[in-house]
Length: 473
Ligand SMILES: *[C@@H]1O[C@H](CO)[C@@H](O)[C@H](O)[C@H]1NC(C)=O
Ligand SMILES: *[C@@H]1O[C@H](CO)[C@@H](O)[C@H](O)[C@H]1NC(C)=O
Image (cartoon, rainbow, N blue to C red; front, top):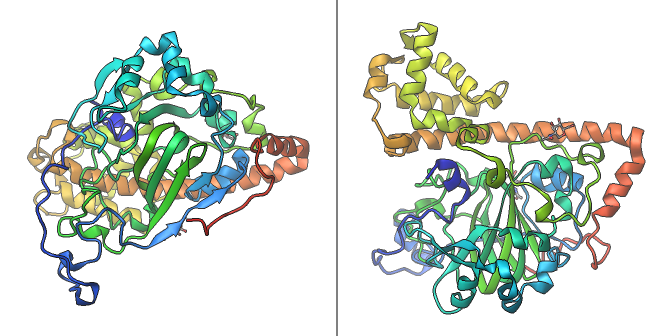
């Protein structure tokens, strides 16, 4: 399975880590805590985040316009709950088991995960939608699949995404359906995510990626998740989870939530649970203004839009979203080719940085100190004999790992991801400025478009007042 899909379908790829948790030493009362003894830290061998500081997530009772959404939430990476935001979709009222079973298309085949506590080693099963509906209340099964075509018209595109400049960058849309009790691993996605809940409740723990990306570095970068047992955190094995602040969101049926690009999250579901999420490309040049948004139909549904991963993408195009992957899969080959083409015997650190810039074109212009430090570490990792230059002997000594998924490749990947983080932060800042500039122009030239597009984005059937209800959490 290709890397891109495992980054995205974090939950369909399986790796085993729930089976063997060593019984840890007894937990001491907190006043006896020893800072060096991880087993004395509060929360040791307890569920993830159970003894940690919890921060409230912002809540809105009204949808922002696409412009406001990107300005205040997407560019600065702020998670937000849209209370009752899913109620406008027909799915919210219509999707009972009886209704779903009555549809002739429910004979279509879908993917079903065979565990509710996420286990990335067990492959999903194929069965018909109807068969799943007969089984899911009895067996430990979790439907995780692209939204079946025959159900797409029941799910409306949330108003903050109603903008041509955004919808052309939709990547995929997935249905999550179970009788409750699912627990995901702690993971992140390198896409933006808006998730709407049509039945049941969800509890989502978030960790601020920007704040903790140096502290929490996944031991499974290939699938963008941590191997930590979310039901029983072993601080001896995962000391990075000490002193982490968690944001916590509690969703009810009819609510939606924005999960920012790369934010760590862990999702539990309660009761009969149906959610649909939309992933879109964080790296696309999205600047939603009244001009770039066009005038999309407010009733636009998932049936009216295309999803790049599902409908259009082939393997070669992975590179568009993950240019670094080609390099990680075979760094030795990439660098050898470069040196041959350029007629070079050795590479200096500066030259390696130059090559990384061509592999990651977004890096041009953003080689700040943090990026240079990471570039230095990448250089050191490849300079096998530590003599301050990369030669063909160094490259021959690089471990020959299948698709770069061995320990060497994983370490390299972790560093490239940090480099990409630096780029992403710079890009978000630039886009925010561009948006401000375009809005300033738009207000002068076309104030009418602006106000009408804001009106379209009001939530149907809720109060007309933006409220941030922090106390509830
Ligand atoms: C979105 O709009 C901006 C500003 O006009 C434009 O530069 C960019 O290419 C558009 N992006 C897409 C993906 O259409
Ligand atoms: C996340 O952390 C960064 C860095 O500490 C901070 O600037 C930002 O405000 C935080 N975001 C939220 C939503 O708290």
